[in-house]
Length: 112
Length: 115
Image 1 (cartoon, rainbow over the protein chains, first blue to last red):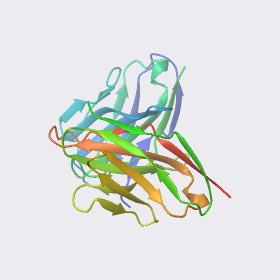
Image 2: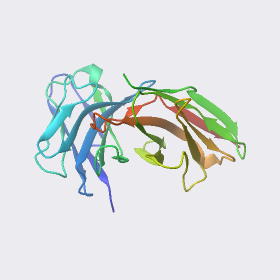
Image 3: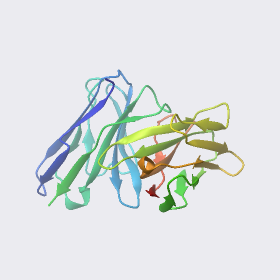
C-alpha cells in the first residue's frame, strides 16, 4: 500500500529536549515536505526536499532542521524545542514538484 | 506573494442540500490548484486537482471545482451532501516558475452536514 508514515503520532515533551519526527514514503517520490498545521492558519511549509541531499527552507523554518540522506526518509529535527512549536505536523511526498502531494497521518507535538 | 483565501471558515448545511466552498487565490503566474479534505484525526487526502486542460474538474465522490482564471477562483461544489462529507476542506495553490512545489494553503473551511 502506498503511504507516508510518520512517527511518533503523539509526543509530549519539555522545552529544550531534542526530538526527531521520522517520515518515510514507499512510493519512490522525489519531492518531500514538512508542514505544520495551526488553528486558523491552515498548513504552512517548514522545509522541503527536491531530491536526496537537496533541501530548502519553506515559510516557517526557524527552530527546525531536516535531512535527506535517502530518498524514502525525511526526518524533522527540533534541536531545542520551545512551546511555540506545539502544533500538528504533517509530512508529504509527491512524484515531483507540482504533482499532488500524499500526506502522512500527522504528528501532534506538545512542548511544555 | 501568493496567497489563498477561503472565504468561509465554517459552512453548516443540511443533508442532501447543495454546497459551495469558496476559494480565491492570488498569483501572477500559472498555477496548479488543489482541494484537500481532512477527516478528524487523519491526514489530508487529495480531493481533486487542476493542473491543465478542462477548467471543470471532478472527484469520484461527487465534488467538482471550476478553475476561473479571470476571477482567480477555484470554488468547490457538490449538488447533494451526505453526513459523511463532514470534514475540513483546504484549498491550495502551487505556482509555476520557481518550481519549488510549495503548496500555499488556505485557512480551511469546516463543512458540517446536519441530518
